[in-house]
Figure: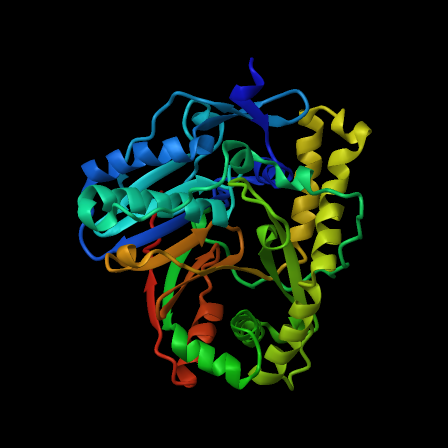
Length: 417
């Protein structure tokens, strides 16, 4: 088999491949809502143009002796109307001949669903924006003829395993975090998840974060911590609450890869009961700024990549490696109360903006996962939860309403799959 037709999975992808299950499918969704209904025929044509620009998604995951690998495939994607939950199963024993991503639509919304082993939120959003650009170009050729997104990177740059490229052996052990509090209550039946979409004006959120002299990420992180604390049983309140946050490593290294390239950092706090949102946000902000120093991020990236470069570990067969990776991933998850992934501000050309209403994203997770997208004057939080209990989310939403920030909430109906 030619090396041009296959490549090894990256370091993060190996964790997703070892830990996916029917509830936490290890899939993510990025969506763009337009101001008019979607034409499925034009969307299909736009998708075919998009995969020519981003062929890295045209792969099937194969099982090797020591690690999984990605093999190019001639299977073509087919646009369908949305018919199942966000973040569906896209990899497993019944998906050996299928693509590990899909494109769906619902009324005005275009969805890209992606198995996380292929790419991260940054790569998925770039694919979505190229798709939307191609769609609008077909529908409005005169308006969009000079609009370009995603040009410049070579095929080698897009396919680069940046973890391997930038590893320097300058490893530093990740900071030790104690077992953290997990939201109490029963999980949903049938391996289901609940999905909540929360929208708030970006201007109001920025005003409040500036008032506390903290970043917007710290303001929202502190709000979520307080919401979790207010829902904690009294006997659990000495446990730390820990928020995990993926960090886009492209901000620290000169990488244009479309594959996974991120690390997870954590902010932890043990409550005394005397905290205010302002005091907690300032502490959160100070810890976050310290962790995000370039040298800290680079050493942590090397630490997580270190095992990849130990020869004896590389030579252990896959059927032994996977249970070990799954064990340590489960152990690591016990140190996390919730995850916040901030995908940032969606900057698209002005010609596209007049047709785009909003962006939304979700990521599957066994616990609670919040994904943040900002577009124009709206911030949208896509929240995934495996719990019946919605107390944390009620506390979270009410905390913004009490400060006079308008909040809109939409939720999916939980039904047996």
